[in-house]
Amino acid sequence: KVTYDKSNIFFKIIRKESNANIVYENEHILCFKDIFPKAPVHILIIPKGHFKDIFDFSINATLEEKKAIYDGFAKVIKIFDLELDGCRIISNFGKHGRQEVPHLHFHLFGGEKIGKMVS
Ligand code: AMP
Image 1 (cartoon, rainbow, N blue to C red):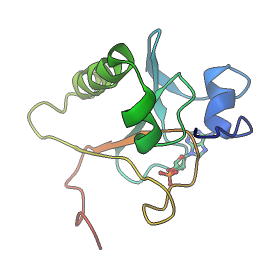
Image 2 (cartoon, rainbow, N blue to C red):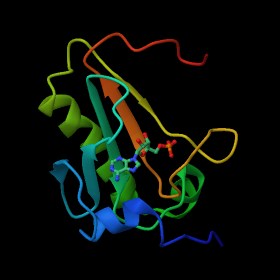
Image 3 (cartoon, rainbow, N blue to C red):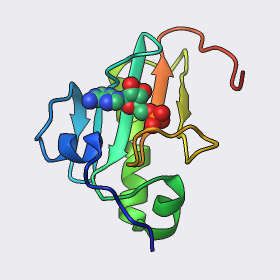
Image 4 (cartoon, helix red, strand yellow):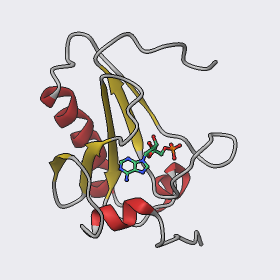
C-alpha cells in the first residue's frame, strides 16, 4: 500500500487551501499553470484523487479517473490551441524521474519547440 503525504502543495491546491491559476477543472482533475513555467505554455494536469505518482495511479485508479486525465490533456490542448503545433506531456516519477511534489502530475509544455527529450 502506497502512503500519500497530505502535506504536499497539490493536496492544498485541490482543497483550495492554496491558490493556483486554474485553467480547467472537473470532478476528477485539476489543470493549472506551473508557478515556474519552463515554456510559454506550462500546465500541470493532476487527478483530484490522492495518488502519489504514476505507478500508484496505474495500479490503483479507476477507469473513470484514468479517462479523466486524457480528457484533461484534450481540454488543455484545445484551450491553448496546440492541435497543430503540438506539445510535450511528461510525468516525473520518484528519485530517478526527479519528482519533487509527491502527488501525481503531468507537465504539458507548449507554445514553442521544446528542447531535447533527455539531456
Ligand atoms: P516535479 O519535479 O515533476 O515534481 O514538478 C513539480 C512542479 O510543480 C514544478 O515544475 C514546480 O514549479 C511546480 N509547482 C510547485 N509548487 C507549485 C504551486 N504552488 N503552483 C503551481 N506549480 C507549482
